[in-house]
Image (tube, rainbow, N blue to C red; front, side, top):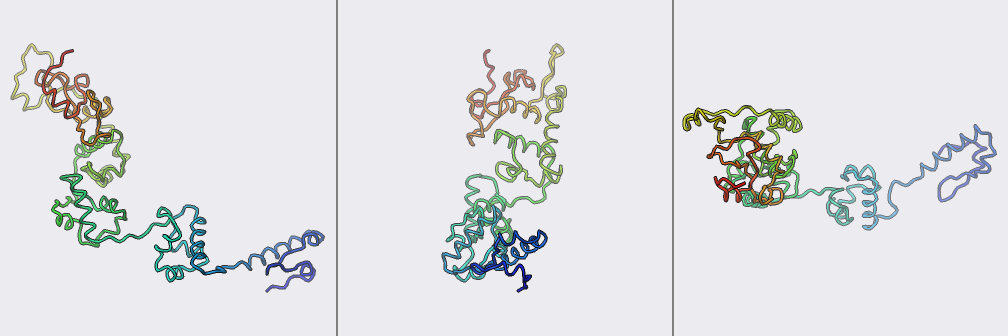
Length: 337
């Protein structure tokens, strides 16, 4: 222990094993000497703080885990973080309670603060794949979708039960095609389908969930980011509509009379026009008001008010959003106005 100056040592006593100063006496010292003495007292008080627990009972160790969890201030409590802040070694916790996970459970630490490592069997993985396939017929789940369903990180499943394609084949599903190149039109069609399904702008994570048919990697690879892909989509659908043109098939099937002022429109409605009509009608049926965002069984169509077979044009004024049931009941009837 360092020896204090004789004059300041005479002013110090001990209490509870730590040095304390008699403040009136210290105040009587020269200002420079008083500052030096205070520094010495503070440094010696810090040296006597215990770095271990007085009691190593189960309750005391669990209380220490709770204290460290509070001290972490919302940060993820890992074993490494616990070793940095705790007065108990992680090995002691393992020996006392059997495992780190059991100690966290006994201490009542929430999984949002200290995530647990969960082990799953091959049967559980195959069962989750089968359940997903029954909920979304005709769709093969991705590894991330099944991991989320089981409540584990995708790295827990990756490579532990063979390839993902083999697991899909084992339950009778078609493997997910790898490395497929999607066209811009297919990517934009998928955005419209998701926008219609949710009734709002789709989120990046939803690209990897049903009913999406184009994964997030395709958008990032094509445009650099999801935000840039959305910008390209908006620029595409906001392009001014080109004059109505007849394709070769319509020219062969129909002869346009010379006296007819309005050309015959192609039956198919462009993606940009279909999106604008859906946005205008707020992604819901204009007759019954149902939408896929509230009822997953609803399927929306963009329908001609004046049927195409009766000369209806592909313009916003002649298009509206109908659900499958309302559109099926209307067919090609010309409504009375």
